[in-house]
Length: 272
Length: 359
Image (cartoon, rainbow over all chains, first blue to last red; front, top):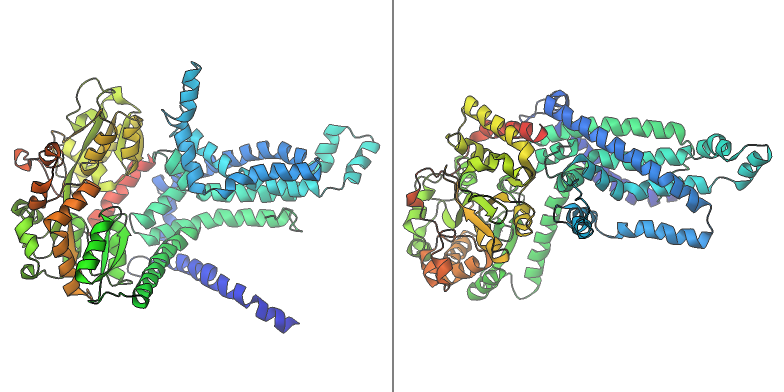
């Protein structure tokens, strides 16, 4: 049996070696060497220079903001969904997943067309003689893009966690005299923590590392750390610095993973 | 995050797979071409595909065609030799870098009769800036960097770079999101060379760009075209090759070469040092210089052609004599071509540009 399962796992091992371990190794190799191939920590310490630190701060700020917005939008929705009849909630989940069938770039470009000065939204607003919306090329537009793109990743784990709560537990709380508010604070919220943590991870990490959203909706004026890394690779062709900065970002991802393993011991929030 | 690196690898792999698949298909069916093949590496959207088909038919040579987006992304791929390209089409400063690093092969013009016959002598003269003895590069397209403005959205005609710092146009200016072009604007405005490495001049250019930043609507590359056509901004920095196209789409747009002077660029065909199909490469370049083929390419991509014979064949007189497509450069004395600044110079510019972008 065990030898059989070993064989079965071979393709996965090969896959992770070729597409995860080796590329990761190359990132570390590039990140820890300079152009001559000598060992250096400069690429990692480069995060402390004013420009890079500012980009990192901005990326942290925007991804944090969009995670909070996602959470505030998703939690009530997930609660509504969890209390619904099966047939109807499947339909609503479908509606939320539907945009994900379209290409991510295309969806973000669509927001550009919507938000532009002469864009769709402003045309509609001016038709009703309302003041124009001026958020394209601002941090607000980037947050909007992040929330739009990553909201489903918050809803689904939250919904998973909430749907698993036994209604008997809630009924028991009511029987013992807890009102709705107390039931929520003492029962529902604590039981949904695995979903919250995994939702935060699923939104925060891609938001922190994104470069497409910021360059399309930020007009290239707001440099997030993801943009810096992308440019090091595609334009400046300094792979060493790009890898070094990527390694700094990995620290934040590791912190996030440690947090989620503490709160989500049974892997309940894992989804998709 | 590792996925930027993976993305790069993926791009390289995709290109490799595509290449090998197309090579395999070539072997399997009638061609690899009775007379072999030639591997071409050109800018995206920079040729009329019909001309490639015609070449294959006439010469029995299979063309394997690959595209790049920027000079900077082309260079490492050619250098690594992952794909043995025969021909590439880089810009001036990148050609001088490739010459310096011994990556190009000398041309034998006797095997390419159309080159000297059809390409205007002044373009070879211009090329001497980066290819001093005209040994390596055959001009393919050329142009200037200038200002495109919407005449319904400005108060007076735009004629100078200085006006990109005018606060009346705040949030209405599109700037090029590329190091050399952005710095060129500021350096020319300061009356300096666009190839300067003087720390003080560079610092001054950087300060100027930072000063301009609040007025900029967005830093973009290809999107200048669409945004200007859509009336999204009043003023944009753009390559002259896009001017004819944008005017066709939106007649309110005007292209000008700024008074302070600007960059003249030439993209040229070069044969790589280790080209496996050198003879076919010569035939390909010669074919591309044939007047009817050059005309087809001009009609398709609308970038100025240095092919005098092809220009004679342009039917639309307005375009044949267009000041935009074919400006008389002798009337300007402040035009410059980019030259390669060396690795240190490059990273100096990149650092300063990052400071501007992150400001």
